[in-house]
Image: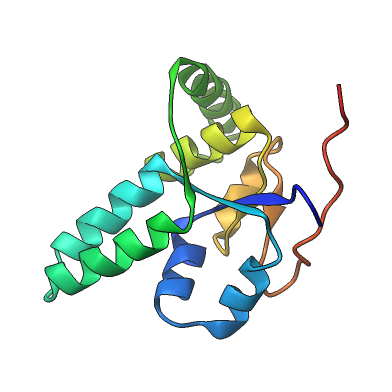
Length: 143
């Protein structure tokens, strides 16, 4: 679908890096794939902390080159605060990096591809699961 976009959580991006052809094929249904900055941070840490840092950093860089980076800013911080407070009130906190990933996706109204179930606690986040959801979804209404 023209204009279809998605952001990858670390779980989905790792599946692609690890050669999961079903997830890679699914991802080709999108025109734009975003990598939120916290996902890149997790990747760089994992690569540098591995037994093959040069090889793994190269693989991360190759994936990042095929995607657009989703930057965090002041509006992300406000969205983060709202989401974190909502989750606290519900008694359903999620990991800190995942909260930042959710915040930047909610801020930009970009669905998140993930297999982590705790993202469902973020009520304003659109979630796509590669094994379940088709890579097509309604376009945002035009202004």
